Image (tube, rainbow, N blue to C red; front, side, top):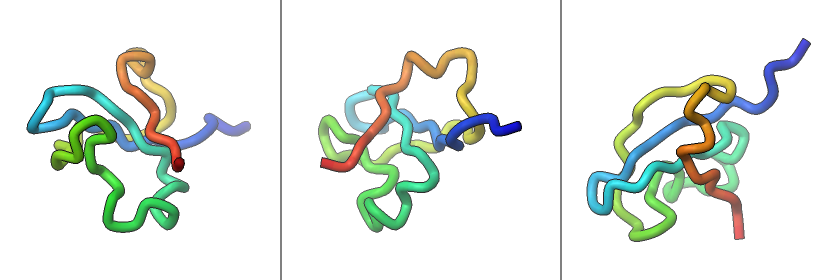
Length: 64
């Protein structure tokens, strides 16, 4: 059984917004992985794993 994608959850240290990246997107984003999609600020890592109960509070960052 699969739990689905693994996410890394962040909040922005600049604007305070919450966002998440799927772990399998690390090669796609490279050095941009973990940066805020809103302001480009450094994201502060919070947690990782399959979808958490508060998952909907975080915007999923997708490749453009």
